[in-house]
Image 1 (cartoon, rainbow, N blue to C red):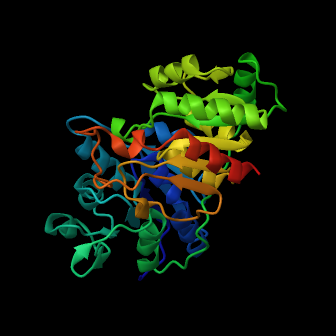
Image 2: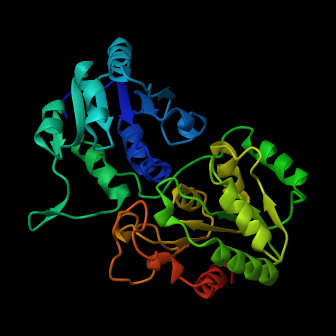
Length: 342
């Protein structure tokens, strides 16, 4: 790629897990361009963890609303970026950098309209003319490779934000969990949709058994809107559960919480990838999504799924009996936790 950029815009993915899986690509950009200013643009609630990703100097919240594309383009033009590294495939991600006339705009060209907005166009991975799912880690690294950046490892990196440990420990103390006590963190929600949710009674049974066997405090950490799910799990448990729901844990606190945990039990959501980045063992309940998107760095993970005929369907809600999750029994989760904690 000709020229040395002084200012690089990286458009972040919209999903938390994908954002964490972009850390190897960010690391490659930083290593290749150590003096460049790298600005991450994304959903506003990612601001508190954005600069904890490798190489990121600053964060821009993406404005929303009817004319957001116009205000976003005007802002990007004013800031004078040399490169725009567009990790999402959407038209929206590419339109403002195009209107801002950023000289290099790199990303996947999934259709002719998106292709017209890019200067460096990558074809989505294909086999036999058909698109195939690959790990999001490698998907993003393909973009930075095309920009001339050598890989600097595939491991996920996410630092604990300043002050988050102290805030998190104070919340746990208030809930009855001392600073040196061992915990299993449970994140039972999923912003994707109800199809990713493991049944609450299954969670309760698995949490009770794991807590008793390994003398762990169960800490339920719902995201916004997931409080009811966690409350139902806590109410169904025989052992005490500590519910961090009023308010829900911030992203910064969630990183600190997972960093402190002995084990994470989660649906296939963002906390899974935070656990990998913080080297915390994690049991993942996988339902309607294709495992190939996240089949990376599996040594400290146990990814459990049921081989049902309709999975992966990628539906947000199940139109039948949710068999991919209801048939995934707590006994499998308990056995997976035992392997990781042995």
